[in-house]
Amino acid sequence: MYSKDGENYFIVDAHIALWDARPENQRNIHGKQFIDCFYDYHRNLSPETELWTYDEYLYQGGERLMKDLFEDGYVDHAIFQPAYLGEFYKNGFGQTKEAYELAAANPDKLTYNHCFDPRDGERGLDRLHADHETMKFTGVKLYTAEWHGESRGYKLSDPWAYRYFEECRKLGIKNIHVHKGPTIRPLDRDSFDVSDVDHVASDFTDLNFIVEHVGLPRLEDFCWIATQEPNVYGGLAVAMPFIHTRPRYFAQIIGELIYWIGEDRIFFSSDYALWTPRWLVERFVDFQIPEDMTEYAPITTEQKKKILGLNAAKMYNIDVPAELQLPDAGETATGPRQPERADLAGAV
Amino acid sequence: MTTALTDHPVRDAGAGDARVLDVEVQHVAVQEVKRALGTVLDPELDEPITDLGFVRSIDVTGAPDGAEVTVHLRLPTSFCSPNFAYLMASDSKDAIAALPGVGRVVVELDDHHDSALINAGLAADAGYRGTFGHEAEDSLDGLRALFRRKAHTAAMERCLTEQLRADPALTEANVGTVRLGDLPAGRTKDALVRRRDALGLPTEPAAVVLVDHDGHPYPAEQVPMALRRARSTRISIDGNAHFCRGLLRTRYEGSGADQADRPEGAEPADDHHLLPFTVKETHP
Image (spheres, each protein chain N blue to C red):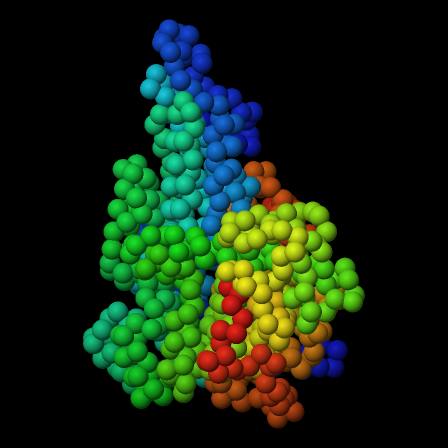
């Protein structure tokens, strides 16, 4: 819970990780390149006071995570979204067992989402069943740019992905978090292309698709798809820290999201341990759309409360004190539209 | 001789060797190479790679059969899309090879997850499909075209939003009536005209500004939505252009000096001043 100026904000951090990128876990140079890329994101976008050393960044462990989120970070509930990255790390990048056990020990604070890779075929389906039997998750995180033998990425619209989504339906796994790109195959296309989300969201209307980092670097494609599909949501992982270095860009991201998909389908996340939630929560509560950006209405306290926690709490049935709950807003002016109207503006 | 673009004055090598060897040695000025590289665009950001700071070094050695030119490129992360990385590297090689007096050209992409693959493909002139094998289907022409259209969309929106701010009588509902001749001369309009040219769209004063990438204006009721879609494209491109620049500066200390300012979407924190970070080991 975060309180300021007489307002109380229920905080759900909808995308966190417990990773291990230490050299002894790196399988090859790509393991180092991957965590270095994250660390450059961290160095580039963080306030000086929030910078971690490289060694701290490689591995945090559960104790530090609990402190950063729940003691220091105002977070009421957080959701693990593990990325496996088995081609880069010997024991995987996201530590699924450690994260699951931490969530099992703190069920009021943590939700564990799992991960799968449709390229694992039948054996992977068996594994998904077995994992679900023991861990009972309701959500999964999919990283479509995951490398897998000769393949360096997949699409959500691939036939095997559909097999997995059909199993998700049967098992009650409703929330599909998607981290897009850069997917490598086919290289002919834009590797951050989000059009597969469009297909799968239309074909599995009973599942929720949460596109992490709101489709960045293709915000425009994400907004267009999300406005047509009522079961597509936007996660603010990686978008949040722009609030510090590039507040005008951040304002435009938020302004566009509220315009296209509305205030009820946007989820806050720190993307821990890329960043920590405390400063992001504080900054977001203080944030306002700059006055000269007349194309956007000012953001309201109610909208901030929804984005910071109420929206994700609703999707994950997380208990929120009655006095903090808010009603849904009306539909946005843009939709959700029917597919036959989807091409009315041909701009790309 | 390697010329790090920021740290040393630009010099071209080879002339001295020619006197010693008393052989007609061909050489080319580093500045010429740099100018050629200035024609290579990052297809995603629609900016020259020289403005983005992606050229790490230029090395020229005079030789009787034409100067040997070696160029190293660098990108903001190891995981930048390999298709764009490949396009920039192969376009660089082509642009340098077209210079008079140039013989052998070596272009190498540094510190990328596909550096080995791309550099081998370039060295062998293997082409796109020869470089990437089963991961390449046909060509990257469609990808280039997609981002040329996005660049036009963003340039169009910048012009119209500037008009909306400058003219209180103009509303989003009637920006469909604005014509090229109504736009004030300047950088924003020049950029739009350049992008219209690239798409083969008309550039005369009577041409309507808000058009799709085939040049068709929108029916009046679709104008506000077309503008809003164009706006989200512009925000995306400006945001990416500055984030990529920033990441490059974080990754390669001092690389900001090689970057040209980008006024579109600029913010105070973009002024190249980095926090005093501990430099990590980037090149093991």
